[in-house]
Amino acid sequence: MKKFKIGIDYGGTKIEGILLNENGDQIDRKRYSYEKNYISGIETVKKLVSEFDNISGEICTVGFGIPGFSSKETGLVTNANSLWLNDKPFKTDLEAALNRKVRLMNDANCFTLSEAVDGAGKNFKSVFGVIIGTGFGGALSYKKEIIEGANQIAGDWGHQPLPYPTDDEIKTQINCPSMNCGRALCAEQFMSGIGFTNIFNKKNNTNFNSYEIVELDRQGDPRANLEFSLYEDRMARLIAVMIGIFDPEAIILGGGMSNVERLYKNISVLIPKYTFSNQVKTKILKNVHGDSSGVRGAAWLWNLN
Image 1 (cartoon, rainbow, N blue to C red):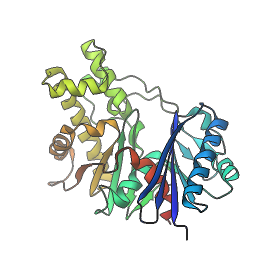
Image 2: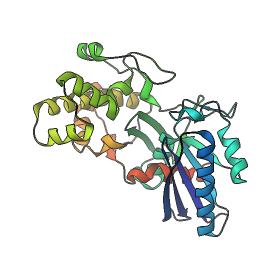
Image 3: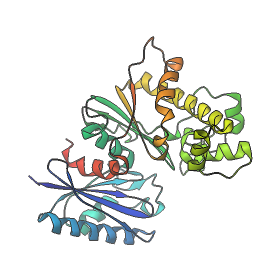
Image 4: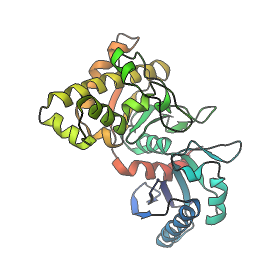
């Protein structure tokens, strides 16, 4: 059995890797920029894996988190934000380049697996992981295994419609610009960090970024407070739907917006308003591993059945 595991987070501009020992301790971590094309990405991965192999002294297992899905039927990548990956046999090409078998999974799945195995969800059987950053994704874990589903998109709620939309939300909505979506009232348009910022700036004729809006709220700005209150209500509606379907013991937030501390208390208070139950035991938790969750989860892919 291999003593060391490599996890790689394949991002749109950077490729990050982590080397873990058999106990899950970080031995090393590296990040490299690359040119936005298919060949450059594979060559960067080869360099990263070779360096980790040399450090560990063995041919390590390698798991990848990618911003899309690798079809089990065709072997081709679909729905990737890094467009050069789409319709490519990425897994096959990686295995040829690295001379070993690899495992690939969506980056939201990797985040959720990491937090379920030894992060915020380690003491719970059922976990729903949510990434709130430039996008808005999710994934399901039960007994520290990822539930992919028949179409490999279980839990990926970013491009579902926002439930119980208000009149203002119906007026605010635009068709989602993301590939393979284009739908009105797409949740990602309201819930991602970019979506939240766009709505705030459009309403208030401003040009703030998300960090500046968070700071405005800390300073008591009524515009920011109102927008966060609306955001929390939307999140409560979405989570209530997930509770009705999967009913997880814990929901773990990741991505840039997960650092907004007010969300955890306020969303928990709002969820019962939209849930078909006289009690809600589900915990809303902040991630433990932060930016490392994705690469750690990718490394843990070789622990799955």
